[in-house]
Length: 205
Image (cartoon, rainbow, N blue to C red):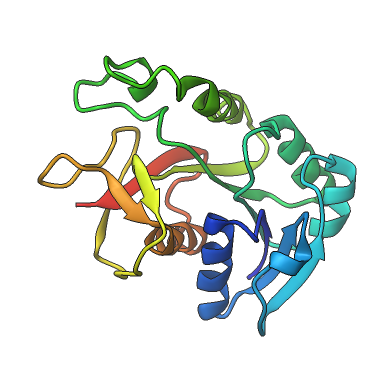
């Protein structure tokens, strides 16, 4: 496929870009600072600002799917407007974990002990998901990571477990995954199309 990755210079976006090209996909790698973009065969670096829907639509026109790894200061309506203008039907989003439920069915954001100082930073991602759930035209997927996502080794397929709206934890109750393995699950979703207009998550089990 030909895939546009927004925020391709970031920790998540760069790993997703590398995973895509390792599987033979062509990537339009978009970031505000193209000097920080991954380089190599199969990657077309593009300077762009995802907050400008009209300009972004021109940059992503002709791709098969868009994967967004940008911060949530850009609302869902902006990205949805861009993909609609460009005629792109698939939008996959690197989401947040705070909107997942714990084992008791309580949203992590609302659960006892969730750090108050973190709430202002994660709330935009919750609003983004709420907005996506209202979208009926674009084929979207919101991929929440584990509670902790970190720069670390690529353990590979089979090292993590998928879930839907409930946080995935290991035997010790920890929820974590590396950006590299998160990228595997994201590209798997692109190829397998298992969560159309749904949210899912992944973590080491």
